[in-house]
Image (cartoon, rainbow, N blue to C red; front, side, top):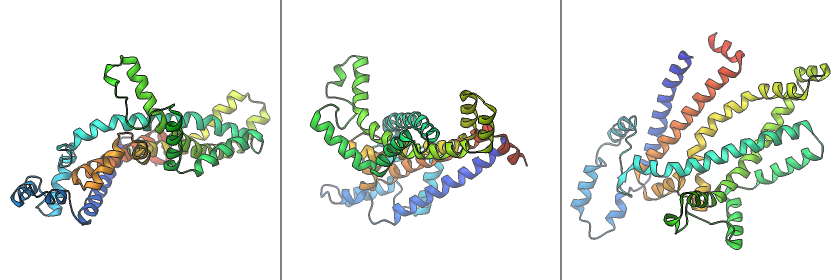
Length: 323
């Protein structure tokens, strides 16, 4: 386990360095920078612009800029945002709770829905229940998340059942604590419904195919012939179909920041997705780099957690690692 952690730590460092360098070069090679907007303001003198370039290191060699930024980023100091006039770490910390509230809730709901529905579809393969579950899966898997968001927003606006945009109502501050929480949940419901429906639809087919593979394996045929109870068969079914889903957990953790980005932008949910869009449009270099850094770090941590869970769940993998 120690050898695995050390190896993954070294690999993670080089992945983090490579992704950061590549994204930095792409941003630098694109025309213009955030100071171009200030140059259009006649009240800002060229001397002031030069001072800003010097203060933020934008006049230095690009590689020197990158290595200075990356050294500080290792300690979660991502520089200063010229657009928001605030430290990037502070801006990400303000938006991150909203993104995590949306993405974690949708991930939990989609897993809680997809697992029983997928296993039911596998148990009743080619029957009516299986066809109904697959119809639900194919329907929402074929609708892009942004289009589904637009449809639900139209319904919400027409009916007035749910609020659209933001995290709270104008009278939020005057509400008691419980009503504040309920008001937050009402604003969360629309983007949460979009993400949950799309993620559940895709995961159901994955669970179904994995469950069918295990159910038709010699082990399950033997247990059924032996007259094992449903509880025993379900226990062996879940244990033998866990490995691919443990691997999927790693990518789910990585998607906690980036996966909800498009839905956030469309539904007006103020999370990391909205922040990154504004940063890219304004070419706010340090804000873009900081957001990408956090996303890459989550990918590395997610894969590490998945590797550890696989080792704990499957003794065959443990023996392979030892060998």
